[in-house]
Image 1 (tube, rainbow, N blue to C red):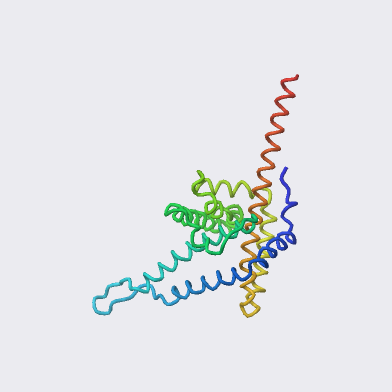
Image 2 (cartoon, rainbow, N blue to C red):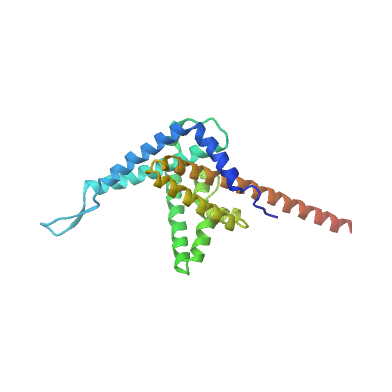
Length: 239
């Protein structure tokens, strides 16, 4: 039987805040790094219209915009893995965020799983919104699974299936937690935006804690089911 005992909002915040408090300066540096990268994209103008030839052409700004996007995704993968290590209690250095991508295929799989889940959620949203909400909750850990497990026989569809499986029985609770985190970040934004320096990383840490808890619950449930099956077979054999 699945339960939500480990998904207590107060405990999730406490555990995540403790990690943030011990690494707050590193998170500020990470935030500044992403601000710099986003500034590169901010100066990009995308496509240019050539008044002489009438052609629509790429300019260097569009290229820089693409490069900044690649850098953001690359760093994002490293930051998530950095947070995984912090939550797991591992000794990890800030520079590890630059080595979070294992290979080109790892990077491509993260992008691919993001695109696929986005299309599924969009399709579900077009079907009366509620299916989209269910999909977004059920698939919310797909990218985390690929980020952590690429190279361990976990492919894109595997990540989607695993995310869907571990969130079963917990989706109402997860929806409520997401609403709380949304309000939490709104408050951070209202504090002259400075509060986001705290609320955004804490929110990500909370999601990773939730993923770890669901992973643990899922493994426990499988062991219980396996034990019940064995005991049933033994009882039937005795009869």
